[in-house]
Every structure is written in structure tokens, then in C-alpha cells.
Amino acid sequence: MIEVVEGGLLTTVQDAGRPDWTHLGVPIGGACDRWSLAVANMLVGNEPGAAAVEMTIAGPVLALRSRMVVGLAGADLDCVVAPRGRRLEPGRSHRLEPGWTISFPGSSGPTDGDPPGARAYLAVPGGFDVPPVLGSRSTALAGAFGGLEGRFLRAGDLLGPADPASPAIGPRVWPALDGDPFRVDPVSPIRVLRGPADGIEALLAGSWRVAAESDRVGLRLEGATLDGTPNAIPGDGGGGAGEGRMASHGVVFGAVQVPADGRPIVLLADHQTTGGYPVPAVVASVDRPRLGQLRPGSRVSFVEIGEAEAVAALAAQRAALERGAALLREAAGWDALWESAGG
Amino acid sequence: MSDEPARIEAFGDAAVLVTLGGTPDTGPHRRARALAGAVEARRAGGVRVGRAVAAQTGVLVPFDPLELDPRDARALVADLLAAIEEGAEAGAEHPAADPVRLHEIPVRYGGEDGPDLEATADLLGLTPRELVEVHAGSTYEVLFLGFAPGFGYLGPLPEALEAPRLETPRPRVAAGSVAIAGRQTAVYPFALPGGWRLIGRTDTQVWDVRLDPPALFAPGDRVRFTPIE
Image 1 (cartoon, each protein chain N blue to C red):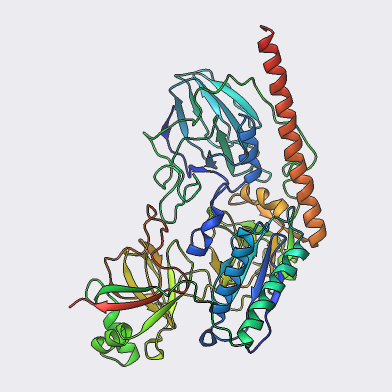
Image 2 (spheres, chains in turn orange, cyan; image 1 turned 30 degrees about the horizontal axis):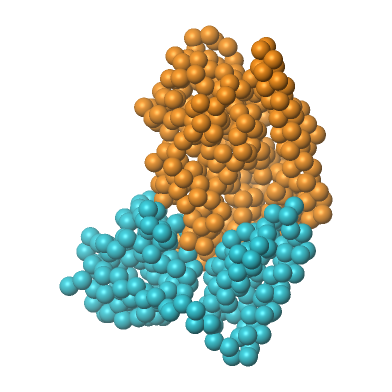
């Protein structure tokens, strides 16, 4: 078991979400960075969408009550083990002993450059053992269900792996692969497709920064032009995302909504099922994981691509994930051989 | 027939958005619902599309572009829509598969339960009693669900009750609050921030995640409010 000593800023159980209840107004939810969720899970032999702990910017402090192998992926939140003082890097699995405490204080990273990623994922064999609700173990903060009692993790919570008796997994390292969404310059533009509303030109021309009011529902962007003038996209003052405005049609993770104040909102995993703001652009599926790693202060710019290019890039990313999974399985095969030989 | 032709377009690389013409009174939400139902039937038949989201003016159909070519997804949706429009033109009634469900919602109007009742009645040139009579005198259709789990947009609200949403939304609206805004009315499924005008409150739970289905209202259901004396 793992005991939560401190909950951190915004720590929840998340999996691949619940896509089958949108007709009842239920957000799809799930991890904001599905790539890193998949990597953390694969490092401990899970399915890519198993339930893991998602932590944000300043993560939790966790005390180990039993021996456990964990997979860590996503942002480097400076995870450190007490009492040993060793750093645990993302993109690897780590064996932890009872009595150890791991903490994720948040990156002390470069202060001059762009801030580091926002979200880290911690996976355990079999996924975290919380009951599925509406077909998913994701925490639905709107409605307060799923995950651990539908809420953030807090001090005193206990979480265990669904598969505590999993065979000892040797240390695993996620390979460096072409197609990995994070093997790019973090300030390279986010790829978007033209949306149904006008206004993509202003989005593409602008230089943006993620505003403080961002959360799992969406990233709020504010203008950050070189000459200091605030930039914004002319909004039409039409319907909005609230319950009172006309939520006129369904929306998706990555839709760029422009409310009346002209400051774009890029929807993330917990977005409402419907929205009424104009949508001049939609982020290509291939760049959704990068959206999940943007944090307040991150600089963002956008570049338009076509549909064929977007699908080809997504195919390359999916292939990279499968290649990584195959390499991990190969490593596991060698471990098994080694053990059976009495090594 | 609708006033404007429907528009079928890409919504990113993994969804098709269908925008249906017409005004809320001519019922694009009904055709939206029929289209979502048709997509759902195809999905049950093995076509690799996601759960369609029907709303006021359109339908969003998500899909995985590595499993279904976006052009094929748009063609599929266009075919399904054409079949529905043909049926509507031929005057075919919605197939009477399921009888329409009617929900009676008992409401305590006004007072602490409906803190905006008096001010809204004033705004509309009605007495609070008249407002309640009009609100409880209509049968509403569940147009679609959105905003939050189990939140049904019910309408159309009689024109006499059409009022704008509050200038300053409340940070917290109590569960079960019965509210109006524009040409619609709703019951808050749980405590939420909200900008509609609160005219009453019900003890009927419209969302319980332990139930199957968890939402009391389904699109197409009818709802009537009855005052608790």
C-alpha cells in the first residue's frame, strides 16, 4: 500500500477516461497527458490506459507500506526518496521498499528558460485499485465520483495496486524513440487544424502564454506579444461554455474556444461535453499530450497543418508507443530467461 | 425541412461536426438526436466511431483517425443525415420504439429555495404566483444534456418567462435548484457554480452515479414541474 502523507497541488487517480457517457453530460476526463500515462503503465507491465496517479506541478509526498515497483513518466517533478536521498527519474521503473517515502516537490529546473512540464504519472502493477464508476477509474471532479471518492488525494489516503503479487519486475527504462511527443523542442509550435469558426489567423500570428487560471478543464491563454501589447482574438460575444449560455454543440480535447474577451481557452481532459464559443482551431490529436504538460507561464504558439499531415503524425506517434512497448516486453523476456536460469 | 442546409465538417482530426439549420422552435435538436441515434446504431453494429454528442444545434461524432479515415467518417455521417432528412421530408414520424417518458418534479417555489423568484417576476412584469403558474403550466422536452453530469436543458420555456441569465453567476448553486434562463429551464444535479435564475428547489435527485442510468433525464423525455403547496 501507499499512504498519502501530503496531497500536493492537484493529485488525482486518472486512466484513459470514460468516453461513453458524454450524452448524459459526463466529461470524458482521464489523464491530461495520455502518452505519459501509457509510458508509466507500460513500465510496470500494464495496459496503457490503466489507472495511475496524476500529479500537477507540486506533487504529493507518499509513504510506502509495502515493497512495490512503480513506473514514473511525464514531467520531472524532482522526485526524491527518503531516507536515501536518491532522485527518481521519470521514464523508468523503480523498486521501492517499505518505510521509504517519495516526494515530488516540483521542479527547481531552469529559472530563465521555459518552465518544465506540468504533470507526472505514477503507475503500479495492475493499476491503482479503486472501483470503476461508469466504466472508468478516472476522478470526475465535476460530479465528485470515480478515482478515490471523486476527489483530490489528501493526507491519510491509502492506495494500493490491483495486482500486489505481481512478479518482481526488473528495472525498466523507456527507450528514446522518434515519434515521442516530448523529443521535440518544448517551444516548438503546437499543431492545429482549422476549426469551424473564423479567427485562426489571429491565433497563429499571436504569441501566447498559459494563464494562472488554467486547470484540468482548460488552458487559458493570454497574449504575450513582443512589443507588450496584449493580443486577443476578436470574440463574437456569442454563446459560452457556462450552463446559462447556449451550449450549442459537442466539443473535444484540444478545441480552441474563443470567448467574448478574446482570450483563447484550449480544452483539456475535463472539458464540458458541449460548448457554445466559436472554435477557430482544434489542436491535432498528436499534440494533445504536449497540451497536458503546459503549465501557467509556459509560452505557446500555434502552426496550422492539414488533415493528412495530422493523421500521419498521429500514426507515427502511435507506432512509437507500440515500438516502446515491444522493446519493454523484450527486456521482460530476457529477465524471465535470466531468472529461470537461476541468475 | 430546415431553413438552411446542414453543414458537415471536420472538427479537428478526430471528430465530425454536424450543424443543423433552423431555429430552436423548429427543432434542430430533434434531428440532432435522431442523427446521434443513427450513429449509435452503427456503432453498435461495429463501425469504429465514438459516442455521438447531440446538442442544441448539432451533433459531434468523435472517432479515431487511425481506425476510420476522416473522409469516411464524414461520408458516413452525411449518409445517415440524408436518410433522416428524407424520412422527415416524407413525413415519417419518429419510430415509436420507446414510449415518451414523463417526469413529474415537485418543486418548492420561492423563498430560500428560489431566491430569484421575486426579482425575476418583477423583471417580467408578473407576480411571483403568475410566474410559478406559467412555469408549472407547461410540459418541457429534455433537449439534451450538457454543462455537467445529468444537467438537462429543458425547453422551450414560454416566452413570457424569457429572462437573461444573472449578470454575476453564483459560485455555488444548491443541488436540486430549479432555474430558468433564456428559453430554457433546468434542475441542478448537484452543487455547481451557475448563472441561471433560481426560482425553486426539488428533492428529486436528477443525478445519482450509483444508478443505471445515473441521469434521471434522457434526451427526448418530457418534464413537468408541480408546486408543493
